[in-house]
Length: 234
Image (cartoon, rainbow, N blue to C red; front, top):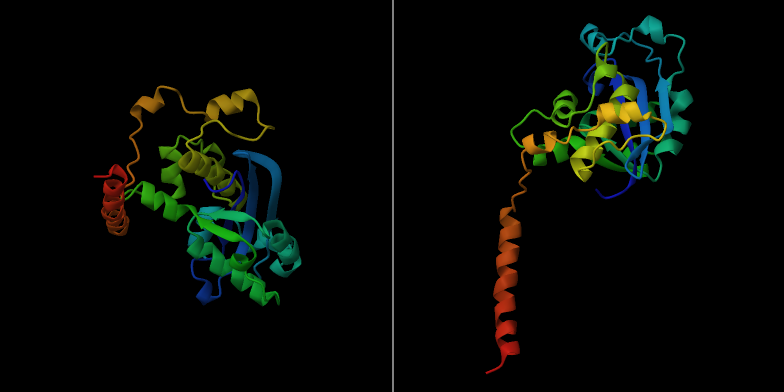
C-alpha cells in the first residue's frame, strides 16, 4: 500500500449515465489512518433536482421526495473539495464516480476537478489484477475478504459502502485483518476479523511478471554477466 493514510469515497446517483443528465444524490467519504478507519468523514445527501430512475432507487432506496429538502451539490461543493484536497482517494470503479463528481463541480461553477486536487486510486483495477477472471464488485470482495455486510442488507448507501470498501481495501492491499476504528468495541473487532483457520483456506495470490518486465530482467542479466566476469579476473 502506498500510504497508511488515505480516504475512501463512494457516491449514489439518480442513474447510470452522467451524459443523460443523471446527478449525484449522496456522497460518502471516510478516512483511514494507520490502516484503521477513523471517525473523520464527509457525508451528504444531495437534492438532484430531477427524477430518480426506478432501477437506481431499488438499489439505494432514495427517492426524490426524501431528498427534496437536502442541499443541492453547489451548497456542499466547497466543503467536499477541501475534504479530499491533497489526499489519496480510493474509489471502486473510479471511472463511474469521477465523471459524476466532475460534472457536479462544473455545474456548480468550479474549474477544479476531483482528479486534479487529489490522487485517485481505483480499487477495482487493483482487484482485477489480484483476482483476474473473477467477480470483483464490492459484494464479491466483501465475501472474499470476510467483511461483514450486515449494514448493507436493506439498501446500498455511499457512506455504508465507503466503510465497507475501506475494510476490503485494507485487507486486499496490506494483508491486514481486524484493523478498524478505535471507536469500535472489542466484540465488533472480533466479529469482523478473519478466523485463524481461514488462512489455511485462502489461496495464495500469484502476481505474474508482464512480458515487458521479463524482457527488462533478461536484459539486466545480459548486461550483468560481462561485469561479473571482469570482477572475477583471469
